[in-house]
Length: 211
Length: 216
Image: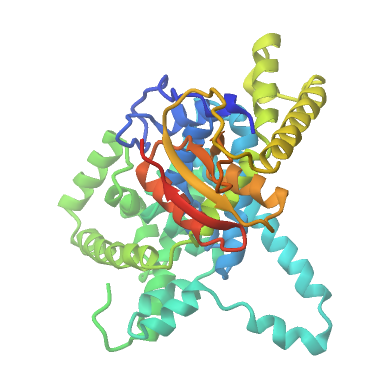
């Protein structure tokens, strides 16, 4: 154990007016990442506290089970720890971090896909049974909540853009950069995602007063 | 373009910006453009109301999902603690060579430094596991931070003790005393984190025989 890494934290050093989270310490996400790049464990812990839930929630847009989502968070956090020096202050820190999660999540999805492709046919039914996740648990617990079901019925692309817009509050330019798509595609994708969501809500609860 | 899809029809294209009008992420000029359009377009005003309700129902849907397990943080911090030297070495190398941050790569000095630390850690563990003397020996380490008194199970493995201390960011500052108790100093200053880490360590019955907060 190296005592050096537990030195007093000094995460200050970056200010700005961009969309960012700031806790009671006054440090921006970017300032924390800069300190993490110096190997500052305390600043990493504060970064972790800010981003754990957000990373986990984002990962759940790609994988259905909580354990896979947690694996993605672990991989992403380690990538942040080892790669924080690659963060450029010109980019929004949260977009940079979400980009890492997205990359790790897509890797995980590809691995899971390969695994499913390799499963013998007589075991395929068992494998598909393991895909229940938080959405399903939530449905079991709150059968009246059709929003969970409707969200889960969306395509990954549609679920993701709604999440980035209405949960992460990213701008369409940031979404465009994160997903590597043109800005107009981000706008129309959000539009169609919204229409699909309404369609699923209507199907699931036809007599209800829906948005 | 269809009658069912006014957002994509001529004159309503600005309604594609409504999601970001709602989340407050439009530029002032774009916001003004949407405001101007909404004033003279009842269809888009209805769409905005509908989208507002939809967004209001989506957020609780995400927020009500079960959080990640409490062990996740420990897993991540444990893995981080196993590779702190690489980051420091890289940072030092960057400073010395004046490289841009994105150009980091492993220092040739890192393997030697890592090996030295492993030797030091191993020596510390051996020293920690030796037979208890009859009284507490002060090791002259500066005081400060939360202190806890802990007695490990006689059957506890060295590697598990090492991991446990690493997980809670602790170091041994005194002991063992006559009761085989060690005094640990926690380097985490957050009371909430400290309490959580102590509770987690206390639950590891296979490792810990007794644990208590020491008087400051």
